[in-house]
Length: 446
Ligand code: AMP
Image 1 (tube, rainbow, N blue to C red):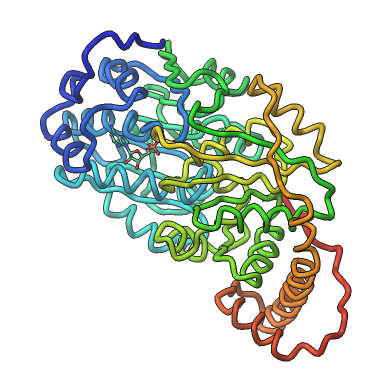
Image 2: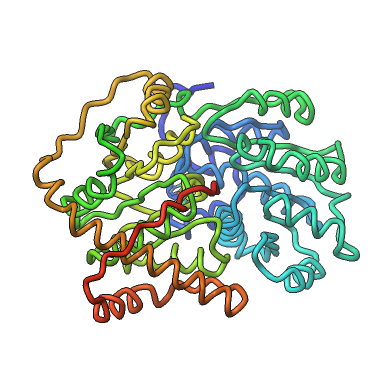
């Protein structure tokens, strides 16, 4: 479905978008449609089902939001469309785009995600919003428990990051949702990677869908410089600190495999004077949003994250992605590095590969179809960091143990705000004793 670029650049009006929505695009600074928008919108306006293969940052939210809003303008009703997303942050972002595009036409949106009070969400549902955006689990919760809420009149269903939504984790909820909504509807699937399961769903729910590929399969963009660095596991943190210090003016996202690792690493980095902040599925929703906002505002320039942040989050201008842990699912690599080199900008992705991760790394090279060059690090300089990093790690582990104990005594909670202060306090009190490092980290997946 690739389109030739011989024609003039299209406008939203050329695609058939109505005046009110063209104005809305204009007010958001969207001058021309992005590639996925130019290709998807005309089919959507013809009433077709869609499968859109598009990377994060391609403008895919607009590609499905604009036709839905246009159809809604033609036949206004409550609970018109439901958009599902695998992560809470992405759901919130999608709702924000709907609200921004629909602000001039009085669009009401409800966001149904976990980690937030259900009662407030039920109150929002009672206001009969036009668009419901949510994560599958919470939507099912409301469908079962919120009086008077149903999606029996739904006209549009969108699965964003569809391949992830079709994973086993979500299978039960998605099936329950599909059972609750009319078969007579439009369905859009959007995803940066396409799995066999998407094809399965295509057979189950879509009607003669038009397939649009705004990105060639599993490719990474040309402006992205990708490198790997083969290192012994015990020096991983040193290499990370070395790279972040070398690139100290940049904004970076560092991907780890586990939630625990995000917290430990960010404590280590903060202890060493770097402005790092963790985000993971283990944090409360408020903390996750807070971390994201601090990163977006530039208060912190290193975001340490699990794959919860590899998809969909709209974080502008990340200069560097570091794969601190190599993903065991190579498609996650595509999503992670898609956080940099967006919208024509350049970016760097560095993968730290240790002796245990080689197999996964080889799979990644197979998927992207090229051998990557090696990142050149001054090994002596890296190793000079070893003692400082080991000490920072020891302090951070101690801090985590302590706060775990405190939290248990207090009965839970998620309060990392004072990490820096506590580490500083500990440094002041420290009397030079050598604590032993705990090996009980890094075991939980997102
Ligand atoms: P998405 O891929 O939907 O997450 O969009 C990524 C970013 O691109 C968001 O900040 C959108 O506001 C922005 N965007 C979407 N469509 C356009 C467009 N046609 N022109 C300029 N920016 C856009």
